[in-house]
Image 1 (cartoon, rainbow, N blue to C red):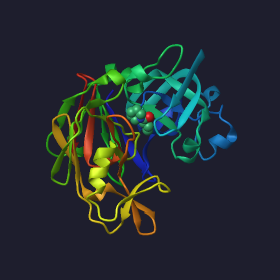
Image 2: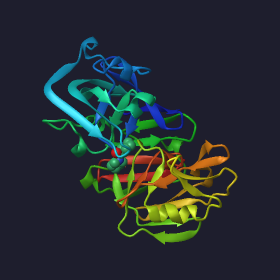
Image 3: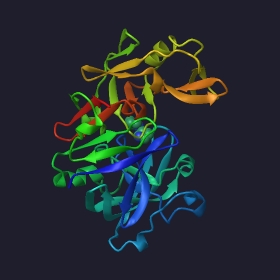
Image 4: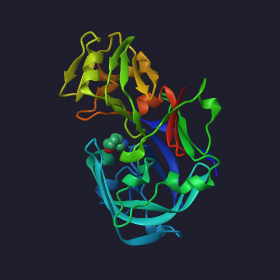
Length: 322
Ligand SMILES: O=C([C@@H]1CCCNC1)N1CCCCC1
């Protein structure tokens, strides 16, 4: 059944969605850049569970253990988690999946202990799920047959409650029309060509680059050529190793940043490109380096400006101004 679940911004880093797993309510981070649904669990050391809600399988009447199944995930930001696996009923908004693979954490890295989420719902393609010996399907893959349309959408307005819509697009959440581009899912991501960007009105080529729509990443991460070109246009900008990225005087005038999603530019307004105070009168940029490779990562800052539609028929990715 179609449904919508509220996404609440949490300390500007992530959006959390209240999710019921085997009758137990957890605040989970919806991550279109990975494909594991994992939760803080009673199997974690008490020190790792501190400050978090966690799932206890023995308290669920619908839990079924998958004996001998394990999972172990490492994210590009250096964080990670691992544990064992069972099946249970998962309810998100009005959409319920029975016998969803629920990955119970036995270990989580320190960033997860300090972050607000009680786990993640992976919404990338099931081909990159880490469960062994048999890969498991995502909540979205399992839900598709019960949805009017095989799609979900992310509405993540800046500093305000948003939503994830399952099975339909909600025209009250965007203006104008949704522009779609074909997705190449061969790497397991919602990935598409992204071969040009603009700093203000100046056009630059990004030959061979792709973009990945990742609601689990906070910022916009692009190749070093684009990041350098952008901050060259910001007076007083510099890379700060202590702050871990580009900073600039909070009084600086910022240009807009646009990048192609397929053949259509998405434009991020200057207001969203200042992520906030780094230290004193220095502010931290919402555009940072992805490091090596030719995959740009378009995270929550992108979704602060655009309603994002993840359509499994095709597959395709669509976006519309919010
Ligand atoms: O590991 C990640 C991110 C980390 C933050 C949470 N989302 C997944 N990647 C981004 C997408 C390409 C592969 C690496």
